[in-house]
Length: 129
Image 1 (cartoon, helix red, strand yellow):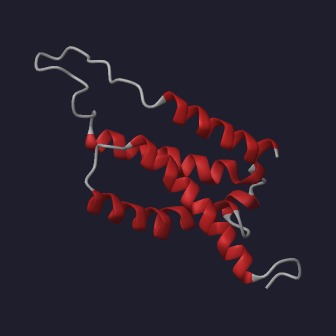
Image 2 (tube, helix red, strand yellow):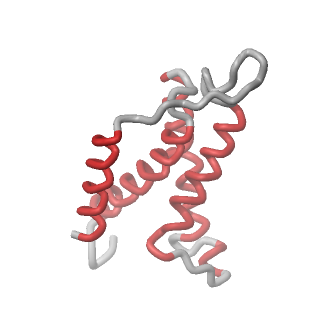
């Protein structure tokens, strides 16, 4: 263990990072997948893809050996989440109702604006204190 923090604290820290990575994917494929395939993918993502990706940088991985800089885990978290989200979106396709029967694009109506603003303010409070 580390003299600065416990193994449990490190586990919880990594679990939150893995959850943040998976939340990027869930936002991209919302309303496009059934629950069980999504849960299987989530387990694979946080159990295999994220740890391998994290090992490449953290803990003396090959990217760390090459001098790669990853400030606050931004590349490990956002690249893994973004790449997995892109792969999932390409596999599942467009949302239902996005295109009409003869291929014309249909606008999908926006969500609840007051709730979106509340979420934005909660994020700001978390970021700026």
